[in-house]
Length: 497
Length: 121
Image (cartoon, rainbow over all chains, first blue to last red; front, side, top):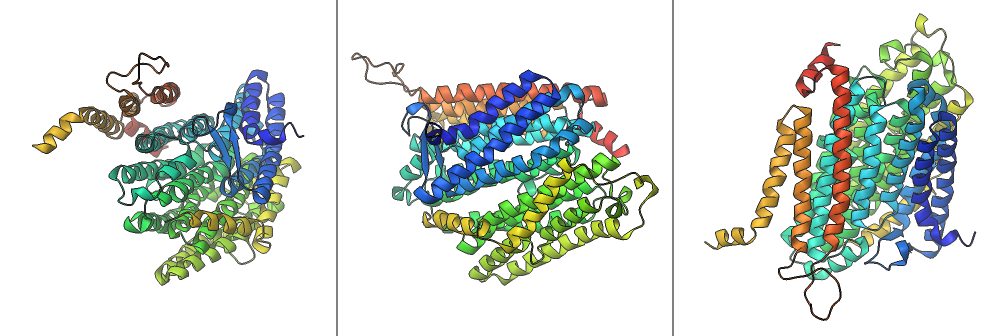
């Protein structure tokens, strides 16, 4: 144990990376799944151990190859990315058992091992972005996760999945290139790529902020916003989520966008917030305006969708708006709300998309008109689905309420009554689209085509129920989510000028 | 004419920005998927230039410690861009593979025609 303990940060990345190689070499679906399962279940323990270490003894700094930073690559874990690592790895572990049946149903036999290989690569990339303390290393991991994501989306059965993957490839590569241009400008200014070192060198002497810093800020914001699907840059997301294999949608919605949000928060608060005074620039105002637009417009579009998966995809765009709103508010309550919503949204969206995957397994379609009365045929699945739906609206007693509560507090802190009204309004729109689905699912007579439908096997049902239960649990006991988020927010805001 | 002199002095940035915008324009303006990928490649290539050119110092040598030399070029940007080139190649390969699959599935690689076909179904 003592030999492993100091190397946890690199193990977080190495284990899924080698798992991916192994899964690809095994070539057969069963063994590849076993490798993916073992790797995914190891991750939360590593991440949990690191978060515990961070919370008790402070940030971990791990020097790759023994080269001290800023010369070598440093893996740095503090409360913010420890939190994100635990979230990503825990969601990956919980949803993994679901994959076996779902993937066997949706992916051709010969491609299943490659599917698990790509999943593990994507996990490597996402955890790598979160764990690394080096801006360029983050770019490499960003591209590892993106390239594997394009493949995962293209594995969808519909030919439109190919088009969705291609469009995402174009947008995603543009986003990553924008990010790397921004990092390049920072590198030209400071001569370093280590995030802590950049922040240190950009310190107080940059009071008359250089135009290059502002350009770097703009490039990185746009690049990362493309990845996290912030409102006008979300165009790739609905198609990608709608046509990807069910399980891929679950994984992406719960982790990929969340890691990108982490990267944005890291750059905003740990680097640019230290170098320049955000009050001189309209950055937060722009982020808030776009977030509010996402919350309202994407929710409205969701109301008119005929496909359940697509509706939830638009709802994701809206929910991402809440998170970026918290980042834009940049006060303690608002940022806590945003960070807590990263977890809460990941849990409930994973539950919702898992339920969609279960429906697809049993019924073969997720068009709303074909799902009338399915609640009576798949009662457990749809009960969990309903719980997560309530979370999405923000009903008191669910985790969604906690995040919105903090966001409203954050808006009140600024004295922005209109914003409070808009948050509530977007919740009401969410109630519209959620209510529409629940009406179809529960109140209508079951269609004859659904006569054979029933709850999925336990390996698929259990993850759905666990995530739905977590939605309620984190709505009642907020010590773990809001507690850690609030500590993290305090730390991030403390570094601002 | 101070501004003109500035521009001429920093002509390498002008080239970088020109390539960047040309690439971005092709990605956005062209409907043909292969052309889109070509534009994307140009866009990425401009970034290599952005990194590599400030790393070169006139009269600087390779960074090998030797009493005869005191001015060295920074090797790090070149190393970074080697990684970025690999990423760019991988992206281009994957993009072209997707275009092949799209061509098999739809029989065309014009984006507007494909969107039209999907609307009909």
